[in-house]
Length: 563
Image (cartoon, rainbow, N blue to C red; front, side):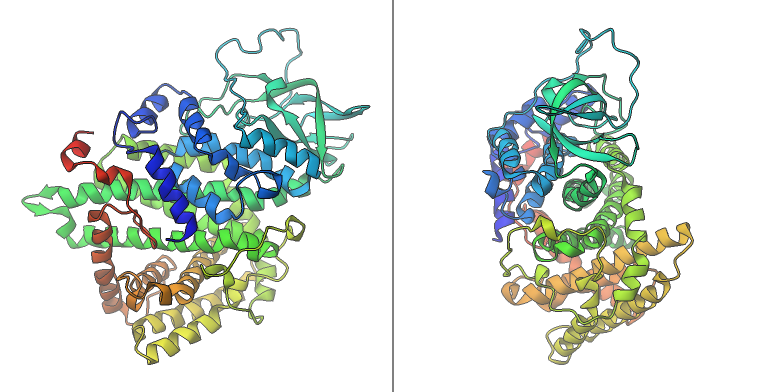
């Protein structure tokens, strides 16, 4: 088993069966916390004890984070059980990223030691916290002010609402000059702040999205004065991993629930799964999940192999995974009429997107479209990020760029990948329909890049950015299959490119372009994919390109149904 998936499987097994109310990290426990707007402190402590916090810290600073693919799969596993817990615990990683990028080794090691030994801030707002400071003037929400002092800097002010009360130290922007543009990044102790009442959220309830106020608190400068905005933007190129994990984990949870219900339920003595329209929608959903997984694999490995392209890779992956998760969670709600877990997942995912700035991510991708148009067509090496056999080097933060000036290696390598599929079709390894659909994808990508340079209208640019994310996803699927199919020759999902053909058909459909062969290609592709999906479900495995047994499937069926 690929190492990141083995780590995820081990964590899943240690957490126990989520359908068992006797387990701490169970669906029932999370539902109760959600109903009470209560922070999942005990579950977060369990994750700390299992070592998850160590994966928020690079190995050179004493942690276990050697590659970001490991971190993604671990956070995905947490999100598959509960999105709120993933956000509540994962924000300690988000807060630490600026430190890993630009802080001095001594400062980074200090934060790393705190996280590895799981010394996390346990204060939560419970009516009256901070009441001792009752003579302060009304708070002005915005960047705090940092003033130089003999010991470093002194921080005064209130941060906007954000889930910043878990980690012992947090990175934040503060003003270091008279102009608002003079922003710098600081590392400050959260337990020295006053906690104000958290905002009541529609979803991810209990994650303490409340403001923090500092009164003359000492803080350490990260990087240099005035570099805060640039550092925040570069940090975003690494923090999207939490957003993507929340999206894919949400898909994992609701799709399995929907499949289980649909396969069991009947209407007028007919199984729902036997109805053509239902079968089609479920197979499309499974194809969406596999495509999302392929995108996440390429994107997380690109952190190490193509850090200079993360300004495009991160937003493209985030937009695709978020859009697919929104649609699939809504589909699960329609198919199951489930207000409980599915309803919670729907609320959590929508709110997490609003809090993390999903629209800003789309705009950041749209703003680079002209640059992507100019770089498209340049010769590109093989997409090493798609090959699981490729060793990942250490991250080089100094290679992060605000703009992907060389474009996307993945997209620039699409013509060669399509030619490779055509050769495999001629050799009988894959179908000619698949090679034809890949050719259609290449034509769509060519046409799209011709439009990118003229995307001046904001609304048109946003729509083109979404189409770009779909083409990016399709290219990721092609490369993941090409670079790994030889190692999975005995897997029905991989043999003959079953999953790839279905994913291309699905993604071309989302692009509103028919595949090669039209209707028969769609029917054949989905017809071949459906048995693989059902086989994984009945075998008690994670629905995945790389499945592994799930702990909840080890319980007797009658016990799971009662839970």
